[in-house]
View (cartoon, helix red, strand yellow):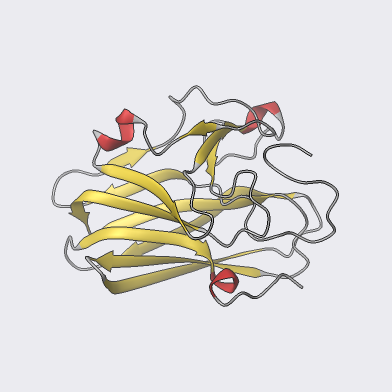
Length: 193
């Protein structure tokens, strides 16, 4: 058993990894692209580097949390130490269910300045996906959902799907104050099959 995954388990136990990299957040001002390359993150199989309290993100107007049970903070990992080429650009990505079995949590990003466009790249690292799974991004203005975007991961017989799948939401004016990203099936309690 390692901190990042439990082996061997024939089917995934909800959302061992939703790698997100290359945040593109557009608002009233010029675009801001955020990634995780400046973080000193360890490789997978460790506790990772907790991202929620990293000052470089807060100074750019974004905070990261994980909603669900058990709630935890996303952790950054340097995937070049285990899966070269896994991250979208560079070598680092974040995992939202680090060491959590049966996890259906969602990544939550809160913006200090409203956005009109948010884009992330998603991937999967944990076990095979025997069927295609929908990843959903929900955008909110305060507590009101105003937009959604979806992407499909899998099926895959590999133990990972590289972070190469874009997922984004767009609205006409800068009104997005928060987005969540997670597997749609986790919201209904559906288990991979």
